[in-house]
Length: 204
Length: 204
DNA sequence: AGGGTAACAGACTGAAAAGTCTGTTTACCC
DNA sequence: GGGTAAACAGACTTTTCAGTCTGTTACCCT
Image 1 (cartoon, helix red, strand yellow):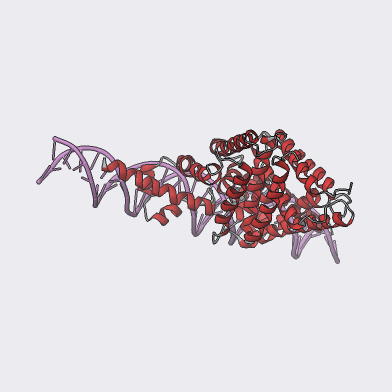
Image 2: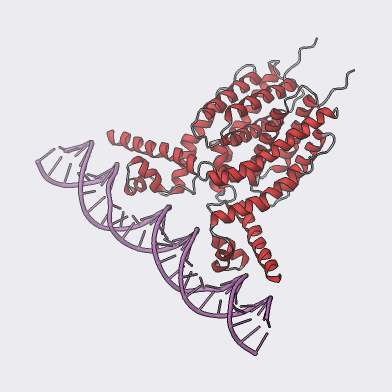
């Protein structure tokens, strides 16, 4: 039973630093040796645990990447009251952590989507699935917001969800250039403006 | 004199298909041979005209990429009256051409920004410069819109510009997944909504 | 305790890819 | 029309990298 644990621990370790390095350097631009160097591990160890670079990356996407996106962008909103405010707070805190990265490399998920598009449909599907979960949860939250009287009943929840996702992906892409504090401020400001149209107006 | 023309023509040819292939496969994932295969040209020819892959790519960015972004996203808005409507029309037609790509690979500029971030500060600067030109032109257009009575004087033009750029980058990233017609429709719809807050309200 | 297997080390292979170099063709000039 | 340099061809070099394979260590079970 000890061995099982060891195995899991090592795989976790390889996956965790793998995600970091892939995030920083991109998938095609990082070699397995790059990751192993960081881990002081050998090729033998790696290929004992994983079949190929591709299968390895997919396992990272399904385990770590999905959970990362879920915990930072989906869970804080899921099932909460007052979705609009929750979304603002959630996005703002996500941007805050990004802002405090010494070097920011953008939004992990959209980076990989950009990198794999047209090259690996298999991996693309796994990545798109994460986006879909995000979208569905946003739509659900907005619909619930309508029932609870926080969101105007006339808004198109799906359109708002895609608009939110778009703008988030975009601002994260822009933030890599360094001046991220100002960008975050401007973005959240405009997001609040946008939500003024969407929120439920109490009949006067 | 004929030779000068030939030289220019060949360089143009190499650059043009280079941009296409880089756009489709990414910079690091395409070899010079890939491009030369497409052109039925030899390595000797290529390295006669260009010093290195990097210098070659920079020349593409400065010549072709800048002009491409300028002509599709900046010029149609520059100096026009009624900037908000012009922006909607401009974004919509840009998304339309993207929609009709058999296989879409996203927004060229943001793809490269994602790819080069943290890897090549030199190239990053050239790419960021294009973004800056875009941003400045949007801000100018919005300011002019204020003077001309199309845009509410209280809006923060710079914040709106970054919000616009963000959302555009994001929607183009999302559109790669295929269902781009619906995405375009939703996006433009929400963009129009957003602009309702920004436009100048005639005092009743 | 010792056999057996899981976990790992690291040299090796083959393919790809950037850049070089030498040779060949093409176009221009007198 | 022959000399000259630009324009191009393509074999070659060197490096990098995914994946293989054989050998070694650590742990577990009886």
